[in-house]
Length: 222
Image (cartoon, rainbow, N blue to C red; front, side):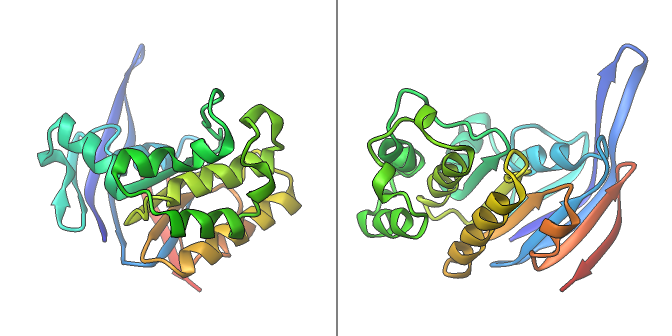
């Protein structure tokens, strides 16, 4: 599903180039889940953004389902993001002017994959049935993140990328939201790459990898 090979990434600073990733190699199979851990500044979010095609590596290759991202035009990348991946962030990024039901359907409509049966199942399993007519500002943090997860999964993406998706939630709500996400993924072909700082959260996923000083320091399986 995902192959990251010898990826380097630097950013320009006033003090000169800052190398964030130094030859990262990573693999993720279909239906696998991988937690990417590491201290602040280790390159976790940078790697996730590269995998999402939101930025380009300086060197190395990123391949998703045999498709090398650096060979795609901006238009092709935009279409690929709409149709093949789902994104969930720490900031919920819901559209404030849209009701919950429209936020949920937004990504699937863009992808041309709005399926009423799957939409209804997501609403039921995420416990959103009574909230469909509300706006994001009328929801708790946990409710907003459930909507964000439903929106990301509504188009049945091949790959779900999550950047600290429970970072703004208390521990109990975090556990509840993560369990809902893992339950939904268990019934789909979607693979999950999640950035997290929490060993407790990481332990719930199938594999764990640690970035340290821009390199993959360790990886394990449950």
